[in-house]
Each structure stands twice: as C-alpha cells, then as structure tokens.
Image (cartoon, rainbow, N blue to C red; front, side):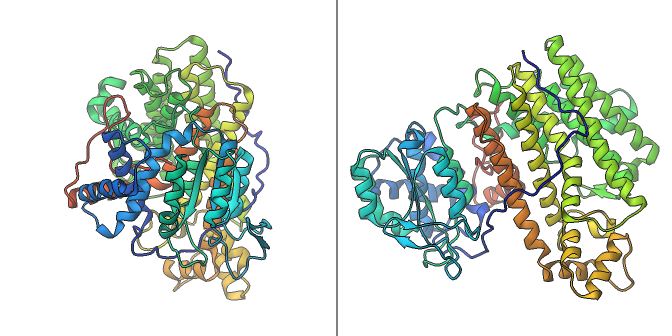
Length: 596
C-alpha cells in the first residue's frame, strides 16, 4: 500500500477567497410545490424508496405516473395539490439508472432563462438562449460551466422545436431539464416519443422572473454516472448505522466495559448528542475506496470511527474550558457538571482511548503506523488553530473576514481531514499524493463552510450558542466591522472586537446591526462559495467513487441538520413508519435523509 502523504503542520498555503457563487434570494414556491426544502427532500426520499420497492421501469405513460403519485400521496398523507410535482419526481427516479449509463457528452442540459435576475441581466439572446456574460448574479453560469466542462451540450432555451431538432440529430441520448411544472407537462410527450432518458427539476415558481430552484438536485443529476459504484449507497442508512455505534451496548463491545468513574464520565460524554459527521466521513471514505462499496462495513472499522469521535469530543471538552462555556447540546458542559480537573482528565482520557483503538485495530503494521501519524499530525494542527484564537484573546483586536476564515480553516479542517484519511487508510487502497492533497483541499473548504454555518446558526433567540456574549472571533462581526461607515457603528463593532459590550447594548441590537449592514447576506454568500469550492476541489479526481460520494456527503452535511428530527416528527404525526438502519448500513429506508 502506498501511504497517504501527510502534509506537515503549518505548511498550508495562505487562504485566498475562491470565486464567489450566486445566492438565490428567497421567494416562496407556488402552492403546488412543497414549500420548504425540508419537505421537498423528504418527499424525494419517499419517492426513491417507492420506486425501488416496486421496481418501476421506464418508460411510463403520464397517466400511470399520476396513479403512482396518488399512491405516494397516500403514504405521505400530504396535500393532493402536489400530485404533478410528485409525478415528476417518480419519472426522474425511474430514469435515474438509464441516465447514469449515458456518457456526459451524449447528454443535454436544458435550462430556462427565468433564474436570471431579469432587470440586471445584460446577456444577448438568440434562438438557442442567452450568451452568458458570467456576471455572477444567477446560478445559470455555474450550472452551464460545470455541465460543459463535463461534456454536456448545454442550452438556455424553452422551445420544444429546438429540443426536438436536437434529439433528431441522434447526438443526444439523455436530457437533464429544468422547467416549471406546466412546461414539463408540455415536454413530456416529446421525451416519451423519443424514448430517451429524461429527468427534470421543477422550478419553484413559474412566473417567468427571477425563478429559484433546488440547485443540489441539478448537481446530483448532471454528475450522475454508472462509473460511480457508490451512487446507490443510502447515506441516511449509513449514518444511522454509525450513530448506532455510540449506544452504550455498542461502545462496550467496541471499547470494552468502562472501568471506574473516570471512564464512565468520559464514555457518557462520548455518547452525548452530536452530529457525528467525522466518524461518518471516516466510514464514507472507507466505503468509497474498498473493493465492494455497497457491502456492510467490517466490524473492526467501528474502532476507527469511534477513535475519530473520541478525538473530536476530547477537543470539545477542552474548547469549552478554554472558552468558558457553560452549556453544550442544551446541557451543562463537562467542566460545569464535574469540575475543571475532572473534565480535563476525561478529555485527556478520550485522546488516549482514540490512539488505543487505532493501535488495537486488525490492520497491517504499515497501515497502523500511517494512521497514528495522520492522527498525531491532525491533533497538532487542530491545537495550533485553537491556539491562534486563544492567543488573540490576550491582545484582542479587529480581525478581517479573511483572517477569521483562516482561523475557521485551522480549527475545523484538521478533524475532517483526519477522518477522511483514516477511512482511506483503513481501506488499504494505494492513495497517490495528489489524492491526499485533494482530501486536504476538500476538508479545508468544508471546514470553513461548516464554521460559517455555525456563525449563522447563532443568530436569533433560537441560536445554538452565543458568540457575541462569548466574545469569540465571528465572521459576522468581521464583515460588520469592515462595512460599518457610521462612527457609532464602528465604535460598537470595535468594542466587541476588544471583548467589551457597551452598557445598555444587548445581543438583539448587535444582530440587528449585522442585518442592517447585510453581514448575514455576505456570510451566506461565503457559505455557498466555500461549499462550491469543496466541490471544485474534487474535479481532478480520477476515482469516480470518491468524487461522487464526497460530493453527496457535502450535500448531506449541509442539509441533514435541519431535516433530522423533523422527519420523525412529521412521520409520527402522519402515521408513517420510521425504520431503523439495518446492520449493513445500506438500503434501509430512512425517512428523513438526503442523498445529494
């Protein structure tokens, strides 16, 4: 096995902002479209399970699709007004595998013109659509560029005559289309007559102006390829399998019974609430690079996944102490519950447990040595990143938004990178140095995006934590300070950077200032930009499994948080079954998962 090259700590290139991507303004969908992304993703998953359960094959006439849609509506107990929308999703899933088998260069991506910002778009038109000027105001340029890079024929046009003429050339063997529901209904006979794979992503509005879409669905379909053997992997079920490893009985089997009060406290902390994305990344990387991606994970992989979470939960214990936080997961932090000394010791124990689990794994000596080196290097990088913020607290001063983003990268990316590299190393696959660099770039962009989302999630009364009260470096504060043009605003943001809250000023007023200065909008743009940068980092990967799965994992991480919990509540309210993941971590229906 060729070991993964481990980048030395401190050798990361200076952070530079990637090209910005467009962020859609919020517009409520039409009444016959599910109103939230949560609902739309949930319905998509139910449709996928329905198509799989009954083994539906294409082509299916429009009348039959409506019958299937009525049955899905019965399962969902949702409004019948969504029948046409659900029918389109069923048709997509029926054609999903045939589409995957068509080479990119034999596919057409058909986009409408209405996602443009109508009153600002200066692109000239002909019968084949606009000549995009890459102004960055809409999503058309991003989709068009990526599709053409893959080899697609790409048109921004809505004329059935143009579509028909292209099909008749014989050079187009599949279509990925974006349109309003009424437009899709008009185009259906043409696709049915041609008997070529056609999937369609409905617009959320059809008034012809500044329309919005679910872009993740388009990215999923345009990248779909049969070369990716992980495309059928149920990430929701896989994540459910990983979560099950952190139940008391499972941890006893993986780690051995807890001995003494210290181990009990550390083990209890390990089992507490958390998103567990890092062990999920480890298992995902392993599943991607193994010989049989769809097979059940081997039992010993659990040691590596739990080790990754041990590292993470230990860092949270220490972070909470260093930041003087009193709550996490809606409960007391470990040092508030058990005292500073006990918490420190429990965190140190978890680090030792992580190394012990790696050493106890049934892998070759070479794999084990490389894994331990990767983990140690990641631990060093993470501590240096946290140290940069802690040292700032001794002499606090305003930081630029780029400096804050770099702190985000240093603090968060190492854990994601270690998780991915350990999964790859456990798979025992020879990994070239450039693949390790790709994992590093992907982890860096993912880590920054993850922290930006945390900043945004802190806003409002329902925020997860309070960065304002904690006087921590915040992207929102950095952007607000850069944009403040009134002396009073500059004085307020400057005081916060110096860890002082002026008398009479509350967090609500500061958040109102963030919104007034549109710091939240800037943060949302940067969130989408770094999510896109993570996807862009995968472009040169030659392994289609790794490329495809990491792209879908990104979608899951940034959509699953709000969906988890809602799915169970929705299902219970509507009498839907919420089955558990099976032991293989595959194929078990998971009602509230996303598979981007």
